[in-house]
Image 1 (cartoon, one colour):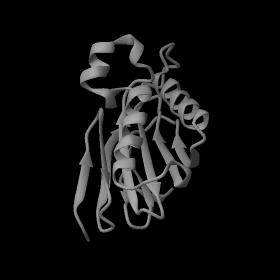
Image 2: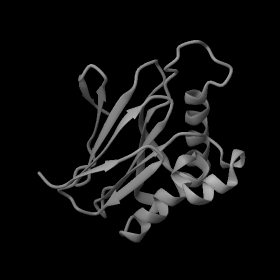
Image 3: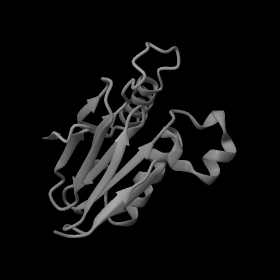
Image 4: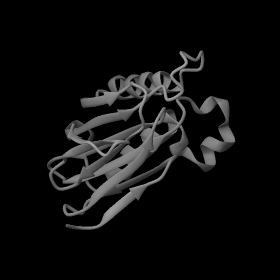
Length: 161
């Protein structure tokens, strides 16, 4: 087993090490985006919190991974630097839950999911699988060499995505 690379909240990491695993925790209303290019064996994860950087341009400049619209382009640029090509990239989405379970007007989880889907499909990026919605926090793990993604619930149950 190779290095375990941890992605924090409002953070992203990419790797070209086929032995590495990239992991992020506590995806409640946040969305985890796992990117993978099979040919280049490049993978990455973005853990973003909010859909749109227009609410705080300064924060978007200093912490682009906080938002879908600034974090996703950065994730792809970092993967391209390691040899990934857009036409080969597939993504998986995890999170977007309504943790408060109160049918809130804000509904950040759903808005985050819509933003990610809109950006990705609008740029002809294939979403391979999703584990979004619900009302529990999830974690995700990407094995860079195989592209395998697993989702872990708060109770510790793991499933392939």
